[in-house]
Amino acid sequence: MSDIQYIDGKQPHQREHRLIFKNIDRVGWNPSLDTYRNDGGYKQLKDALKWEPKAITNEVKKSGLRGRGGAGFPTGVKWGFIPPNNTKPVYLICNADESEPGTFKDRYILHQDPHQLIEGMVISCFAVGAHLAYIYIREEFPEAAEILERALEEARNANLLGDNILGSGFNCQIHIHRGAGAYICGEETGLIESLEGKRPYPRIKPPYFPAAMGLYMCPTIVNNVESLCHVKHIIQMGAEEYAKLGTPRNTGTRIVCVSGDVKKPGYFEIQVGKMTMGELLNDVCGGPKDGRKFKAVIPGGSSAKILRCDEKFNVSCPPGTEKREISFEEIPLDFDTLAACGTMAGSGGVIVMDDSRKMSWVLNNLNKFYAHESCGQCTPCREGSTWMRKITDRLVAGKASPSDIDTLNSIAYQIDGKTVCAFGEACSWPVEAMVDKFRAELVSETSEDNESIAHSAESEAQRRFLQPQG
Image (cartoon, rainbow, N blue to C red):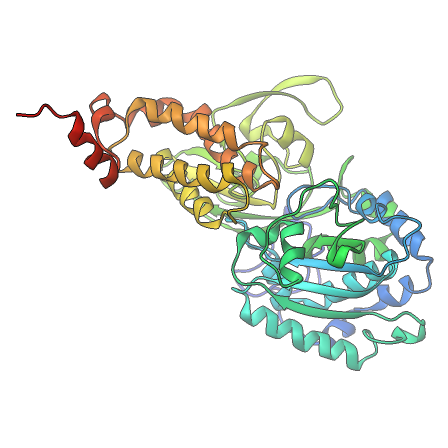
């Protein structure tokens, strides 16, 4: 990568390892097929079509690739869940509904390197036996959708899509489906419902695991944009070489998106587990803004539990070793250690807050988002997310009482684990963690005097019956 030139001000940090983002912000690069093929594009597809499909799945398994969309589930293992005696059509869906707050990586692939995604998708389709694939892209990416449409047309005209791809006898088509601006469509079964033209109510798992009962009740593989791009590089490098990147059980590279209170926010592709939180924030991102100190970080998109920057953790670091105490800055950026610290790597959206931030405002901002985005299927989530938003509305307005913090926490725990999909956890975890780690600060913004304040016009009207009648 040393001979690649990047646009001034967009050069990768020396600690980065660019694989998926190799062509992002590259001088002279454009999203056309000619540019991609001149750089060796689609050679891996040509090679992969000579393999046995099962061999590709096994290679992805051996690579240790874990999904980059949020859950971190092993990609090859997911592919292996397709029933072996299946007689129905198999579908592959690329989840390009990048809507987790704090995450801004997939859109750069779609805008600047769409053929990398298409190549990864066709190889993946061949591996799982899918002849029809969809790219589900969020409505807020209109330019990306147009770029992808042009790229797909170029690929069809070059016999890289369609019938008898490159003379291999393999047929595959890819279509784009644009969402309608709903966060819930990032959940794979909600996405499938939307793709079928229905309201995106997530399905109950079990039995509706997509690999067995997905799109049109047929086996369906749903993978994230970044995950599918990695497939091409696994074929190119081989599973063993790919697995040397990163750390055991946390192989390869991943893209982290740093936003908030740092001097140099941005997107960075790093080897999984080879960089600590302190190195990312201080070395790569330039540290806190002048005169400020880091206060808290949400490490995996807004649904991940917040971490205090002065915390200590007793965890196995590296994973599999004897437990020891580490500081926040010593946390390696891998799936397992972040989970052991009580949070998750998630979508890679690292949201940083310094000591100028009021946690009540941060929490209210998150609660407003999740209350708005709840699909409404499950009562605990539909009602509870709005209740939590109303309480933090009062908190930031200076109208909350100390008991409101306990009520807020109680509501969160009554949502957690009691909904059809993980949106329940997505909206409750930020509240649970914030109350747990910043309770004193939240309580300090309340007043006992507010216990008697009516919280709505309706309750104000009801209180007239409690007043002494003269």
